[in-house]
Every structure is written in structure tokens, then in C-alpha cells.
Amino acid sequence: MEEEKRKHEHDTAQGDDITYGLEKERTRLKKELELEKQEKKRLEMELKKVNDHLEEEKSRQKQIVLLLLAERKKIIMKYIEERKRSEDLAQILSEEKVRIDSMAEGLEEESKKSLQMEAELEKQLAQFDMERQQYRQALVKEEKRAKDFETELEKLRGEMDTWKESQARGPARGVGATPPPPPAKPANLVAMPTLRPASAPQTSTQSYKNRNYAYQRRSC
Image 1: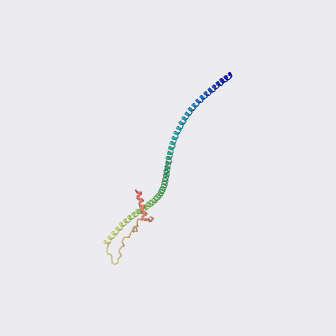
Image 2: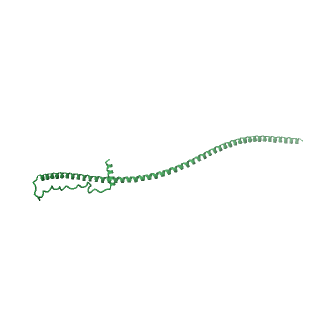
Image 3: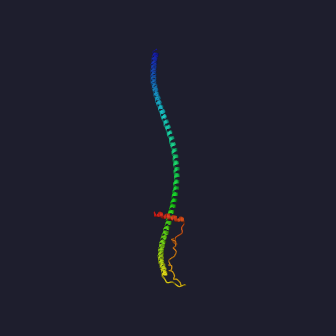
């Protein structure tokens, strides 16, 4: 009986130890479970914060993407407009270049014509000066001849007057008598030639007008 009693007490004590150990373990596990719950709650809150932050970031990124797309669209439209404007300006520049080249060719041609006309005008002016000099020399020569002619004419008139007086005062001649001859005609008493020199070239009316215009222009 004593043995069974001791055995019972030993089993009871051992059962109490086991119960205490189990209770202690249950308390520890309960605390750990509570800690796990708190950690889980904290993690869920952190996760919620992260998700909220991600949603905000996602929304912000979406707005940025939309703004970038709109800006990209504006840049593309601006680029298209600028390219069209550049092509129009290039076309205008090309047309202006062609027009300027054409004008330059025309001016060059006009310059050549002007130089040719100026050379021709100078040539005609030189020819006109030469002709004028020839006319002037011929005029001086003719004036001298006219003066000589007037002198001879006056001399002839004097001789005629003297002959007439001598005839009026002289004795009567017989019938059939030969009267004295009148004064001889001077050798240089000839018709006056024209003022055009023999060496002067014959020119048309238009050429003469051009030379006259050139002379007047040079005289001015």
C-alpha cells in the first residue's frame, strides 16, 4: 500500500510537472501567437501603406506618362509644322535663286549690250569728230576760196568799169573795126563746190542722227 501510495504521489507529482510544463508551454505559445498576430497586423499595415504608396506612385507615373505623351504629340506636331515651313522656305529660296540667276544673266546681257552700244557710240563719235574736222577744214578752205573769189570779182568789176569808161571816151572806130576784147576772166573764177569733203564717207540718215545725238551728249 505504501508502495502504491508513493507511486501514486510520484505519478501525481510527475503529472503536475507535466501539466505545469504544458501550461507554461501553452502560455509561451499563446504569447508567441499574440506576437505573431501583432507582427502580422503590423505587416498588414505596412503592406497597406506600401500598396497605398504604390497606388499613389502609379497614379503619379500615369499622370507623368500622359503629360509626356501630350508633350510628345505637341513636339511631333511642331516638328511637322517646322518641316513643312522649312520645305516651303527651301522652295521659296530655290525660286528666288533661279530668279536672281535669271536677273544676273539678264543684267550681264544688258551690261554686254550697254558696253557694245557704248563702244559703237564711241566709234560713231570718233567718226563724227573726224567728219566734223574734215567739214571744218573744207569750210575754212571754201571760205578762203570765196574770199579770193570776192577779191578777184572786185578786181574784175574795176577792170570792167575802166574798160567801159575807156570805151565811152575813146574815138569812133570805122566800120568793120574790131573792138578791143573785154577783160579776161580770172582763172580762179569757177563754181563753188559743195562743202562735203571728197573723203567723207556716205552715211544713212539714222546713222547721222545717232552721231549727232552722241556729239550733243558729249558736248553736254
